[in-house]
Length: 268
Image (cartoon, rainbow, N blue to C red):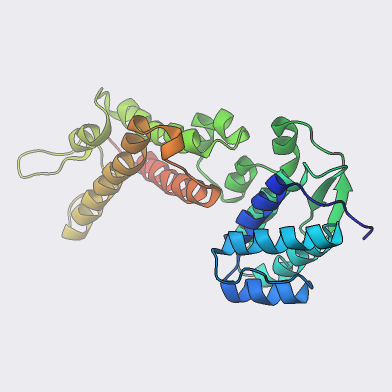
């Protein structure tokens, strides 16, 4: 590859954080050495170790080529043959950053190689080209109702509100099936409450055996847990204080998808 101009401090920080979330300290040691980058800060946090090593290399060599070499070696496709999903996430995260490289944007492909692309001038351009969360969710066969309720947020990679809107969709489906108007844990108790004198409004099994009753109660507790962890927390906490990264968002939305599939099986 021809000589690539040094990356800005902002790009270096973004790249370092993505790789720091991916690699162990031992792997960082190995790939720095393999990429001929001096390991100048071996005792700091992982992303800072990478940032200072990359910045020092650029200051000395006035190029970013060996940083790209580090990315190629650390994100070699063969290292992720059993974890394709994480590999795709890391590629997407990196490409949302690398597209802002000067003077031409850079794209890291699934084949483990780089290509030069038209530089992005806006975040909208970056999101459009880098691959989005929506496609990853579709690859997971996420329930259509989850995608429906948070489509706009997903297209912006707004993880905070994506999870919030998807959680609201669970309550909406329960209300639609029961005619209830409550929300959160109270809604779940009224719809799925199981006691000696009352029957639930909704159930996805016959509730004849002890196993069936335990499964029913466990599902109700899972519903309340999702409301408590995601919806209630997000509704009362500013976005800046309740950060959700891409992996957390994917896992959260997968749980919500499971709940939707179970709700589809419920009869009144």
